[in-house]
Length: 146
Image 1: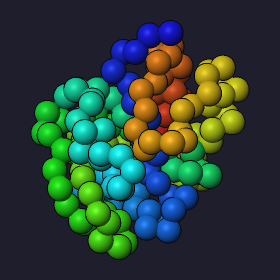
Image 2: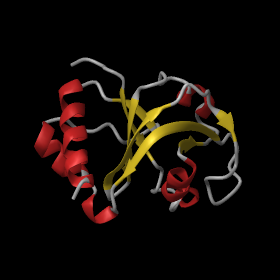
Image 3: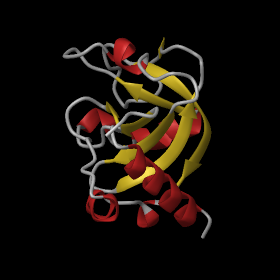
Image 4: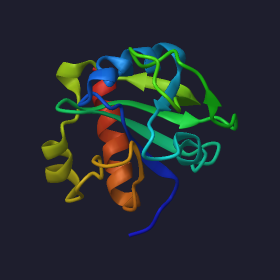
């Protein structure tokens, strides 16, 4: 397996401050993370400009696809419901969205790609299987065009 610049971002719906945060991320064309247990700014700085990111919503599935800009992470408190310590954002371009009813749920992605999406733990993970990332992107494009 190899890394070709594809990432998966968990929008953090499982915790109360993250409820519906994905919709604000979509409105502001960014991903956002917070927390005392890890350095959100350092984590969000890892992707390179042009890397692709899939937005994953807990218990729903993949709901968005975009690419990272060259803008570094920046501090802001406009995404999470409560003022969260250490909230940082990273801008994305070309954001495409799927409605929840068309989302690519975790199990269907595993069945389609034979790859288990790394969506637990930190919010942002590398996708180390470039073939799976291409399959997910192709399926996403099909679903978004219908």
